[in-house]
Length: 264
Image (cartoon, rainbow, N blue to C red; front, top):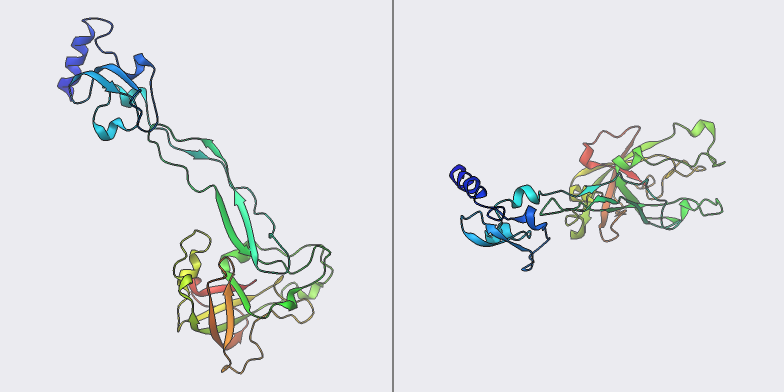
């Protein structure tokens, strides 16, 4: 390569057009563009028509100065927007956050990452502020990481001061689940892959999933004797669902992180 550059430098002394390339032609084109060419030395040491399009790297006919004249520029994106509210009230639905492209990729630079993420959510009050949490019978669950972001509406009159620290943990042994859980690979639903038959899982009951009057979460199975088959559904993918049986109620969850969930 050094010998090639020395030869090119020698040619540069022969005339202004001897080293014509992408820079002199002012060309840098995306994809494969047969019209995006110049006259000069190619990287394979052939003088003649050379190309300044992105595909020239694959075809091996780039102009000698392609890398310098057309540097790869990766995609840059902005910060995530705040999470939106749930798309609907009083039923399992989704929330969304987005980010925008600050710079499009150029000349084979790294492509843009996903610009939108969706996650499951559930609102426990109507737009008029009426509680609707008791309408849910199956246990709707999501990853325990969501509990760090979930907040109770500060203005809700249903929550008295003495309920601030209310909460409990239910342990279940999974009996069955649909195959759709293992197929999830989206960033915010990947937690479903860790649901397995025969495993003991912990599900935390905390406000606002906890009903303000009964201090219980819908579908918690607290009244079960341990032999009753209970149903659960993952928020974010309604096809990921299954059954489990109650093991016990404890004050705090102690399962591994991948087996720790929350009622929602």
